[in-house]
Figure 1 (cartoon, helix red, strand yellow):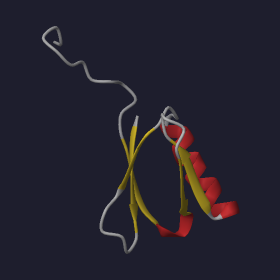
Figure 2: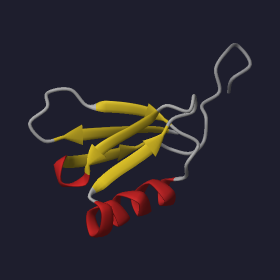
Figure 3: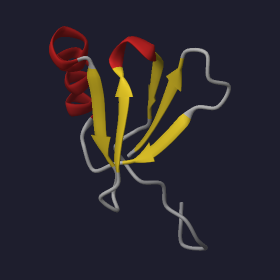
Figure 4: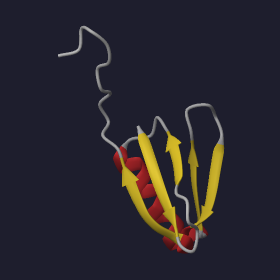
Length: 74
């Protein structure tokens, strides 16, 4: 699933492809805001992205289903 993270005072958004569900991503941000202050996600290749939770402007969470591609897609 693709997650786009908008960071305040940064022109470009951070895009991550992760195996986490929508609920897991939202809960990770909630916990970061309440507790640690650092929002952390791991992408499909094992790369960790850590952002100060107070700087997260928005999350754009993609759908959990993959789109069909190719000639057989209906």
